[in-house]
Image (cartoon, rainbow, N blue to C red; front, side, top):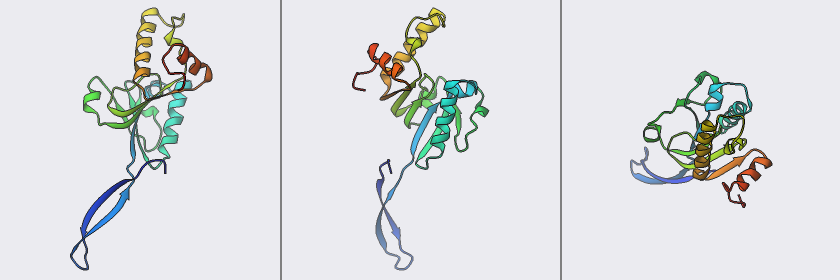
Length: 177
């Protein structure tokens, strides 16, 4: 397996001798994963929604993972993936939610929760530049949030070579990553 086993010692009473006998064995602890899936809950159509859906489907099949789909707004019924609980996040989620092993932003926004490691997937970087597709105040707000999320991340996934190059050009990611 890809995940380490945790050695745990237990003492138990034998039914035959009623004496304590130490027993050592390993437990595989499931990784507790949170996926930012707001893009899917807002709508089923679109590339980012499809990335969210298919990522959750693949994770749900893995027996060593305990995934949760997090969203800020949208329709929780859009997550039609068996064994994936859906949880809404809000202003106090960072303080009230459980601590996840890994949080993975699938749609350009890190969920506001506590985690040991952070993964950020970016599909494009056009919001990091002034552009004609977004009003200037919205673009500046999104740019600041994306930069902050990228800097906070332990791992960044760029889904194209062009996006990876642009992240390097903007000095958001070290060239060796």
